[in-house]
Image: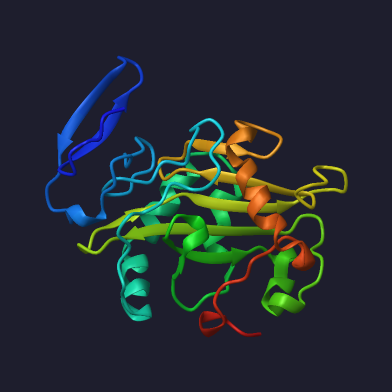
Length: 232
């Protein structure tokens, strides 16, 4: 494919088979690469780095220009949008999407996660997952433990947009040996389900299993930055 000028974003209309060049306004051109494109369902401003095959991506779509802001500013940005985000996730009819904001939140402010596409995340856990508060000393989690991570994209130009809701639920032994019997779900801001382990579009969230497998010693969990942890 010919290299695109850096003043354009490649968008593909799969229904019509069209490739359209859309001029950029208000974005730093230095953040763009020739193969950048905007996922129609990602709802993140600016181009997102492609994750290879959209039907079986190997990582999250990335925010190309995340903001470098204080914890206080990140928290304020989150407070302004969290209720609207929660209403969007709830459209999915996933029970956790409807209730997670009433669970315990384990971070004092949103934290930037490179592993989740350079979005700012918050980690919530249901009552069964209470040992999460012990962090690396938590041990294995009981069946029924659910961790919910909602996300926002905050970019250098000050824009704040909702990202996906990431869910991990500990299932009964034998559910999925490779995942440590965790079920991964990814719900988009409009409530559409991107993928669920052993369920809807399971292949789309297989990369979640691969990433968390690196933390097998801590029951497949990567923990949030120590400086932002809520202690018991």
